[in-house]
Structure formats: C-alpha cells, structure tokens
Image (cartoon, rainbow, N blue to C red):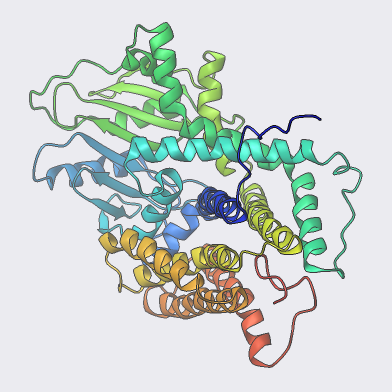
Length: 502
C-alpha cells in the first residue's frame, strides 16, 4: 500500500489567498494610479506655455525683443536686487510663446517689448503642474528617479501587452461597441494600444531616460570619469568658468545677442542666462533653437563683455550629446509646431484611457470569476476622475486667487486622499458622475471669470482659443451628468472608463 506523503507547502486557506490577492490588487492600483497621474499631468504639460499665459492673462504680448530691450530688462531687475544673485534669466518670445519674461533668484517679472517690466509674472498653477509631472511633488532627486522608474514600468507594460496578445495586430480594427462593457473596453484598450504603440513607446522611453538621467549619470561617472559627476556634465553641457566674486557692471547681453545674429543667423535665441551676474566671473549663456534639429537647444557661451567664447556642441557634437539634448522635445512634442502639440494632446488622452481601461478590465475579470472588488474598483474610479477634478479645482482656485501658491500641493494631495476615502464607500457610478461634475463646474466657472476680470480687451487669439478649449472640456465633463439629471441612461459599454454597468 503506497504511503501517503504530506505536501511540502500547507494548503493556503481561501481567506489568506483573498487577502494576498487584495494586497496585490492594491499595489497594482497604487502603481497604476501614479502612472495615470503622470500620463494626465504630462498631457496637460504639453500645453504648459498656453496654460501659463492664460493663467497670467494680463501679461503683454511681445513678438520680438531687440538686444537693447533685453539689456534694459536685465539691468532693471539687476538694479532692483536686494542681495547677491546667482543667476539672471531672460525668456525671449518664440513663435508659440509671444511673451517676454525676466527672472532672478528673488522675483519673476513680465516685460514689454521696450524692456520695461510691467508686473510680476504670476502663474503658480503652471509651476505646480510641471512639478507634479517631473517630481510628483517629492524632493527633486527622489521624485525624478521615481518618475523615471514609472516611465520604465510603463514601457514594460506597453511592450509586454503587445507580446501577450498574438492576435492584437490581426484584430487591429475590431471594435465591438454594442456589446458588453467588458468587450467594449477590451477593444478600446487593445485598439488604442496597437494604433498608438509607437507614441506610447516613445514617450515612455524618453520619460524613463529623463527621469533616470541622474542615476544613469552617476553610473557613467563611476565607470568613465572616476566618480566625478561634474566632469561628465562638463562633457555634455560645457565647463563652467572659474568664479571671481569681485564686483563688476552687469554683463553685456546686447553685444552677445548682436554677435549671435551676425555669426549664427540660423539659431533662434529663446533663453539667456547670466551666471553670477555683477561679478568679474560672470558669463552669459544663450540657449538657441535650431529649427531643423530635435535638440532642445544649442548653448552659446559669452564672457562678461559679450565676446563669444564657445558653443557646447549639442547640434553637431558627439552623438551622445545630441541624443541627450533631443529626448526632451520628443517627450513633450516640442517640435513641428501646433499640429504636433495637438496630436500629442490627443494621443496623451488616449494613453490615459489605455491606463484607465487596463485596470478596469482587471476588475471586470474578477467579477466574472466571482471575486469582485467593489471598493477597489470605486477607488480606482475615484482616482481616474478625481485627479482631473482636483487639477481643475486647484486651477480654478489659483486663477481666481482663492488658493495661494503654497497651498496648491497640499490642497491637491489632501483633496485626492479625501476623495479616494469617500470613493471606497460609494458606488463607482456615483463617484464617476460627481467627480466629473466637480471638474466640469470648476472649468465652467473659471473661464468666464478669467475672460471678464483679467483678460485684456485686445487679448491675442491664442488666449481666446484656450478659453474655448477649456469651455468645451467643461461641457464634455458635464455631458453624462446632464444625461443622468434628465433620466437618460447610457447604453451598455458607455458607462465611462471605470464605471461599468452597475
């Protein structure tokens, strides 16, 4: 008679298995939620220039700046300083950003075409948005490393998703819109993943490269520069001149700009940095676009007298330099003009939809298997719709002057935490409707307020276009709320990205 053997591992109880699965789902929800926040904030960040100007709508439009006006603006801010400055910046008008802004360590001012400051540059929500996408509002090194890691995870998800579905390309045009919520969302998820996979791979890869640059730079410095990270940066961005703190008149920016126009007519200056202004060791960097190149900028270096010293070589230097300088524009779509940015906006929203439906399909699958997780599904719904609601609320509060700049970060994260706690005890359908209503109402109220109270009568067409887009977004967010109010029901599969039929 064969002897019975005891299994090596004791049979797990169903309760312990369910607990483990719930913990696994929660971890996936947290990681997926952070990726979703990055995708949504990144989509908005593509239009940071337009949103920044709309937020500070009273600033004057400036088409071009003369070297003399640039010198005047710099001298005005330098003369008004209260202490020593490490940098003085001039942001010159560009084709898609017709403004002139000057800043020091102490203040940022809008400037008119003659070089006279017109008022304090005030766009705190835009800075809040950029800090959210770059760092998730964490300390810089920790935040950007986490963001880069999430970019790498997103890249792995895109590639593994393509490999996990052998029929995904053959079914690229199959879309079962009239079926169940699960089939409709599965087709939406898979079709968008196929059609836009080159875009998804590009933004995930470049996002990982930008975010993990510090970590990779440290490893490269250890391997090839004896651990000296500054030596690596000198190769990529040029060496800094030796400091000399002795006092001197402000650097001759006007001469530097005139030299740029004469020697490098193909380059378009857009950012001037005076390092250590007002000292004998000061030097001027002029960052300039090269329209036919993907590089973020070529760095042209001048001494304090405005004499040309060197350029870094981003446009024609080592291949590694050119690649390092190109990932930023590829990631944010800052090339090719308006239509490329518009495409990035649409594709970015599609990426948000893919992330949202990905976890939604997971919850639908659990329901089919008899293991529903209604609270987690409601929390996910709260995050998908609560994130735009909190972004809209902080945007409206900042523009209306109700939220001081220092309160934007705590208001966003505390509000999101409270919303997710509420979502855990509320049906997903109600969470979706109320979050959409909050987002839509915030935008619908702030657009006429800004147009009437802050926008000048002769505001450029660009500002009116932003107003129109924000108003249309508000109406789209409020559409299902209006349908619910009038007793209309969405057909199966149209309950929203994360709220299948209850």
